[in-house]
Image 1 (tube, rainbow, N blue to C red):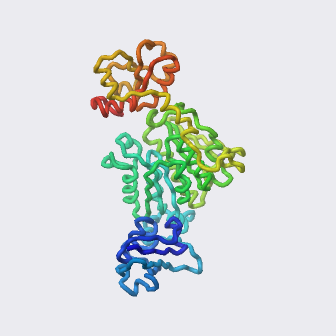
Image 2: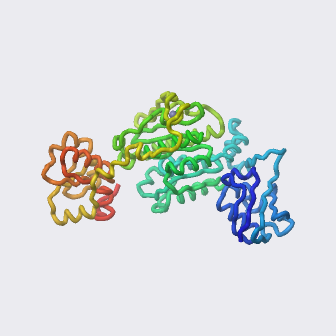
Image 3: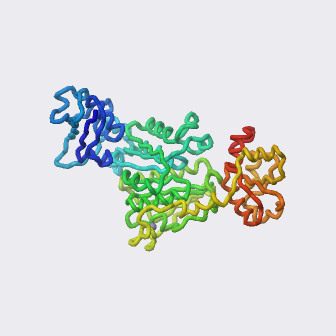
Length: 471
Ligand SMILES: [Zn+2]
């Protein structure tokens, strides 16, 4: 039975600005439940933790107060309208959430600080932050935002928890290996703080969905690990007017800044263009020290809190560089670029672009021929003549290798490729296929008949020989 629920202006902010929502239900309680499943934040607005309708909220079925009937058990039929009528103080239509007694106990160490206090804590409760990525940076970030009482935390991710994530991604745990990162994150965050809501967005952030998604949050925090998404996050933040709390990590180094504040620079002001593909390896290829994302992600959470509370000086117009080995910080000035393609007064980018093409990622799959680990195994079994070239680093070679391979690290290839026999085909592998793709490109340019092993030695270990260690 289709029932129409009508929301007052004050509550529409929590339901994607919708005025009316149709649901199928037999009674008022069921109808509200259907509504809350779609718009979780409304539950906090309308229901007490015990599951009762809050006393300042009245529910009408057509023209009758549901309390005069059977309350939440009041039956509804096709075509009925449920009206939600909250008390409105002094003609104001703000639907600001108040702190409950339990929340006051929980946030005591905030409440006793004059810079936060009950007003600040209410700001946190009424704020929303979107975390892009639930990985190394997203882990400490989401945990601290949840602990501090940020009322609505959104997470975008589409990955599955892998054992190799657990060395740094403290949001996830061993029993979660193989499950979705979003499910794992939501469970952990709500266990930490049941007074917040966690919205999960299982999708790859794209030019088609970023702007709409960002509009639903106050602040966006960038925990991505690739340039295409980083430029997309930046541009969509500028276009929607949302602060972009930026962090990035690489091996022992981190970067931190706040972009896209009013009058402040954006990521493109700092780096107008990405490096060519392959110049900067990803964390999966180059590694990252376990604690480093904790340092940077935690500071991103701190900047987000400062922005919500309106305290201190945001890290806008400044880029902080962290060196974990030196244990040193440097702060550089970042100026707004008056001819920035996206945040200047006359931008050339007024909608999200094709970031894969912008980052030069599109040609690679066409020019690099590859071979599966199964085909490689078959060639080895047939004792075909070829050179199996491993382009990883010596310490990786010690962890795991495919018997019979020749080791020349990618960085040494330009000076050592002369050691290779041009008359033999080359089959090139690395850990996952990224570095070897670049090696194949280089070797083909030098006239070799080279192909790339798709998935690298990790795929070999998974599909052919489990005795070869994965790392
Ligand atoms: Zn800019």
